[in-house]
Image (cartoon, rainbow, N blue to C red):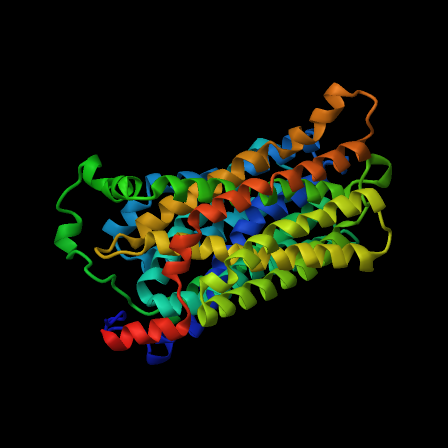
Length: 463
């Protein structure tokens, strides 16, 4: 079945290597800047006397966690992408819009704006980013066949996380370096301004290199606008909810990352002073260890797992991926009890945890791709629904993780901040149990959906 139209931008653009890596870099960078780098920035700014937003670290964890809300709610407006324009157009336009919004965010931070004002800029960026991600994911499903989807799944996840290398790693390190010359607000404002320029450049690149692709069985333009009732608008969601096995799929999406979602507390843990229970890393070192080394490990894990599944199938690698995303959470238990001062030891722990996350995240990605497959040009909408459900499972526990950290001290007032971190990371390990249970529920469907390459070849030959 032909997947590309004859009007592709250029012959080389038909090769996924020319657009998949950069498309998912453009998806990962904004997400990192909005949900993770903003957390690092605010934790650092509350230590600055010139910052006007006097808020606690728990409140910062809560509100920056809510920045993920547009990714969860995007299912309400994503059907427009299937009805107005094309996923390609939406992706490129949203990249340019995000460039302008990041510049505005940087200006707000540099001017020392009130915390709610800065949050409005980030939330607007999150809406644009969520819309872009839905369009990019839909284009990925449309433009690649199942074999290509599996082959690029590791690259897709890896380059998405490469955005964290640039954002959470390199840009955070740049902000730390700028502290030597600029006030903290100006340093972070410059970083977000640079990110805005990067997004505009990516939009220009994709305008040239992304091919024109139409979904199989896509409705004609006239049909796209033929019915405007809400029932028709949300019918892809209704069909997905009524599909057999949706209950198991819902449990998988909500609980697979229950433990990992609460590790947002690792950021203040690494940055907090040792007297406050943390490891007392400065911004540059935190950015290097967690944002750069950790993200590179995550990328390596994602590439390796995607390649392994594409060659040997899901049946061989399903449980290794489930173990990889959960078991390495134990490193934070070790760090909270041993409290090493060596950057090599801390970096090794972060590397192990992030490599495991990258290796295991492919399982979730392929699960959502499998659920979104189908004819009729509704891949973008279905994928947006499943992604939104998955993000809700991350946003809710992640937003309240800072308050959960304080719960033990409410019952035992004599506990120190260090004791609270230790208890919290042990709780995170307990939260890995539901992840294994929901993986078992989805195991059969996932294994059938991504067989080894040899079996796919035999099926294709038979057809």
